[in-house]
Length: 102
Image 1 (spheres, helix red, strand yellow):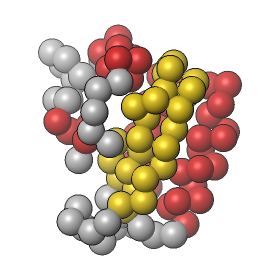
Image 2 (cartoon, one colour):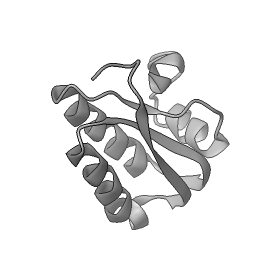
Image 3 (cartoon, helix red, strand yellow):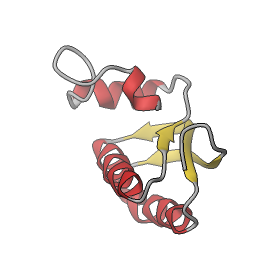
């Protein structure tokens, strides 16, 4: 698999917080079982906390170890950008925003 192959999009909406982390984890795990490239669409998420970011980073590492591309669908989500900045994932000492999408 490579970044030019098709992606399975997982639409995520509503609260992407610790309270729903098991549901989101299961959705991602099911998609990983299919060995296809994965794209998370969280543009309709209303609330995001750092547990979601941790879950995404862990899933991304797992996917890459199996040759699967794993990315967040490009597009602004203010809740996601806020948690990424406040937790230090992007900004002065964090990764660039572009690294999130690919």
